Length: 286
Image (cartoon, rainbow, N blue to C red):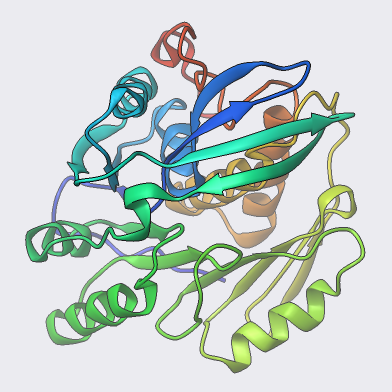
């Protein structure tokens, strides 16, 4: 369904966009490093992938938490920049395992866009995943222009729940919840310009289509502690499987497996907590 092209440099996967401090309230009073683009990078790198993260933090103490998390996961932090302002903070309440966003302060992530030099490095990767990025369409267009003019370039995916637009997308990731119509969402994404769509439905699993083939993947049984980052883990699993040369069906299964694992701990990835043991100590390509 998605053919991974060879890149021109050593970078395999790059994620671009949001990071945040996930601040838990209520019974779970804790702070974790997260965000879609950040979580996807950490999930992949902590399982042995070669990943770089591109995003922005403010000049504050929270920025150090974000940077330390990248180090623990084994993510290349070269694309992390500091902008005037504050690092993003998301206030989360966990209700019987389900994540509820009580407040989101986007901080400098609302102003971030990669530099020309950074875009050149992104264009040399095999896969670029876009998280929350206000000018996502502009980045997709620039990457597509480079691919067309040079005859090579990365697969481009995007979490369309946090960034808008479908043009110049190879893989549109969406989420409709258990009551939503995943097939209708996927068809709309393809009609708007995406080459393929992968849509999660919580406990009802996921669907994927490129307009020709249509696949379904059931959710896998798990012990739910916190659903924060489960969708990001699914995306990371799917991307990692495609990078490994697997077809769409096993890629969906790996996504479901990583999502199930993410539900069993607080935070968006196993080392997300500020005091977590280094994820590099127990990496696996499961």
